[in-house]
Image: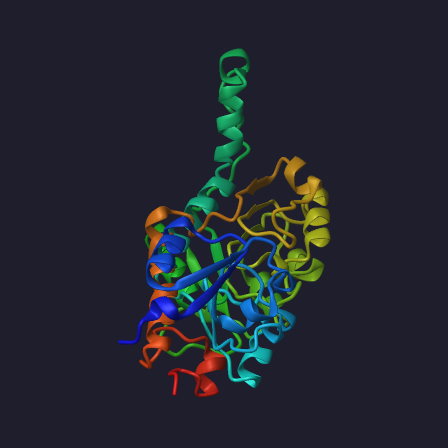
Length: 326
């Protein structure tokens, strides 16, 4: 195995501390809090052969690093990485699927229950002393009993969510770009068709141009006044102004959101809405899972610079044959 301590890996912005510790024990790491490679000297930029990042990696950043060979993305979603530019220039891209699937699916079920049963609202009611002063929490919550659930994006995470939902006795349907032949759930070839057939819509789809603002006013209207929207995919998938209006007007009943369009900025109207449950993008945020994600980041970098096949290249890199350093 080559001496990886002579291989320079750039860490732009923040990265999970456990991952950073392992990286620094394995490679020569250069940290760049500003994410601006212009702050590095020409010689420093020329030394960088890999990137480990939990944030966006633009074409401009890659162009500034002439020796760059690999971008190891910390996360299953990689829409923040300009993958088209990378593969066109022989730079491979990896991500961290599978290791966070169970954590995200578990959190989704928790968020769904919190939203339909108004559990955070009930918690605030108790803490404010209203139970003692005013009596029991009002019977305003809905239930999972008898609900029909649609999943946008029946990939690894979407399927894990569906499997967790089955014991609740709910009906399950889904929308993908294409039908899966290995599941028993009803398939809808359009998102609006799925929304019209269910009363609970869970977004587990990746971000990117193909899903940008796919959950728009028409989809929310089709979901209906008893509808509940849950999003643990990408904030860009939902048209936030349309969602705010739907919540305000009663076009849907409630929303539970773990992701937002411009994180960490969350619209004040969503924060103040009485029928929302909001989480700060924590679906995979347990130390156990983040350590596993970081280990996969380091594994991919180690495999690449050792000349071994990558553990988890993104599909575009795999299709381009960028799965092993030659």
